[in-house]
Image 1 (cartoon, rainbow, N blue to C red):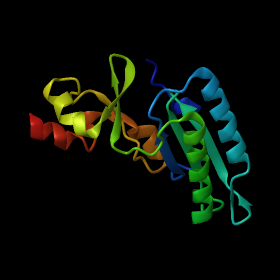
Image 2: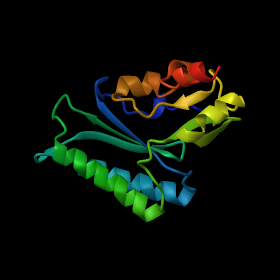
Image 3: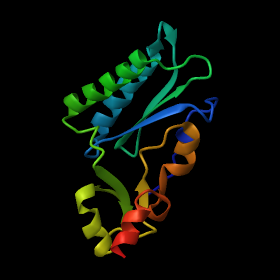
Length: 169
C-alpha cells in the first residue's frame, strides 16, 4: 500500500494551518469518493469566516479519511465556520451511511491494508501480535499541517498507544 500523501497536501499553506481529520467507518467506493471530493471542493470554495473567505483545503485520503485544512494566517476560523465544516461532514455521514465521528475506532496498516479496530479490542490485538510497536497507526488527533505531515501515520510505539502496549507486554 502506497502511504505517500504529503505531495497531495496544498503548497502555500502555513505549517500552523489548522487540520481536522475525519475517519470513515468504512472505505468509500470509487463513485462515492468522487462525489465526496466534489462536496469537499464545493464546501471549501464557499468556506467563510464572518464573511471573509477561508483559505481552505479539503480532500479524501486513502478512500477513508477526510482532511480539512484552514490556513489562518489571513483570517482565523470562527466557531460558525468550524460548525459549517462539521455540517458538511455530517451530510457525508447521512448521505453515505457511515460514521465519521467515532473516536473509539482506531485505524492501522496491517498486511498492506487499512484495518479498523475498536479501542475495546486493542488489548486482545496486542496480546495476539496483530498490533505491534512497529504497526503503523493513523493518529487522527493531529492539529496542524506540520503535524499532519510528520505525525499522522506513525508507528504505534510513537503514539499514545505505546502505553497500552507497555501494559500488556
